[in-house]
Image 1: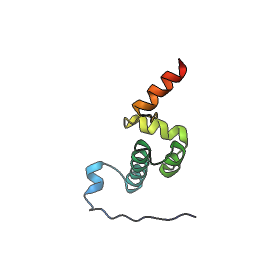
Image 2: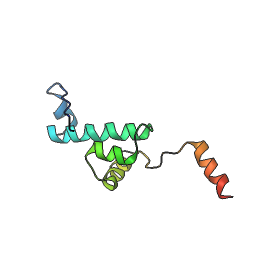
Image 3: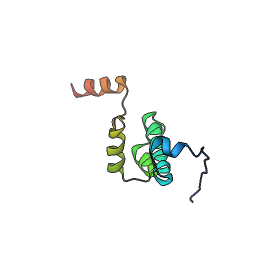
Image 4: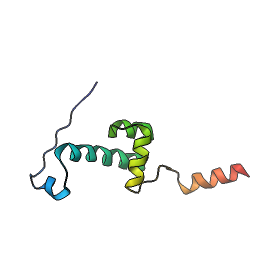
Length: 85
């Protein structure tokens, strides 16, 4: 089931960010999905779905906004390193 969310912005927002309404909506979807992914709320697959992209396109997009595709804590990395030894 699909649903729609409507948001209102002042008319001076689009020229300020140099976006069309469609580009603005697409970027909001990407940024929300990227933040939720970065925070560990959702998976890469779900984030890509929310952003309306393939998983590989989502990974490229988040790297362009300096979000790592690897979401591990320091403890998880150390655990992996110890398991390799």
